[in-house]
Image (cartoon, rainbow, N blue to C red; front, top):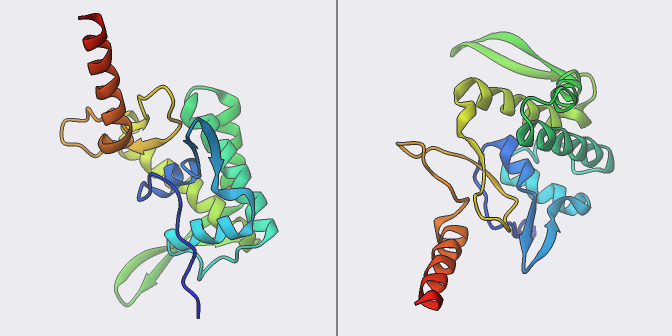
Amino acid sequence: MSAAPRDPRPLVGEPLSLDLLNTRWMADGARQDLLTDVDGLAVWLAAHGLDDRFGADEATLEHVLRARDALASAVDSPDDPVGIARVDKILGHGRIRATLTAQGPGEEPEFKDATWGAAWLAARDYLTLLATAPDRIRPCAHEACILHFFDTSRNGTRRWCSMAGCGNRAKASRHYARVREA
């Protein structure tokens, strides 16, 4: 049994919807994309423990890419009715079924077509973020970065996808500009 391929993305661990957006990133001035094939989809599914529920196949990849584009529209322009409609269309491919288990009440997502499952879960996660704290869904403040994050800082002032990456580059740029002016 071989180990799953390494996730090459610079920012992982964000909520599912934002992590789907972060399957595109910049590296050395060039746009990278994890979801160019089913192998990349397998890496993303495994990162969220979804690989045992949904297969990494062409249909699932197509639906996840549609969800990523819809979420990008909604996140980047939250008041745009087109982006809202695109996310809503993804949500139309599944539903939540109320359940009762030995542990108590629960919810179970259901899909007519399981190839929509991962895409639907990402869209549903976006609804959860909107209900929790819509103002904490943010793009990285670095001008060359295209990553998004959910700000979980105590005071809600996080600006960078990563302080070690983009935050440090911004500080270094400001320092260099001050030294050059002096």
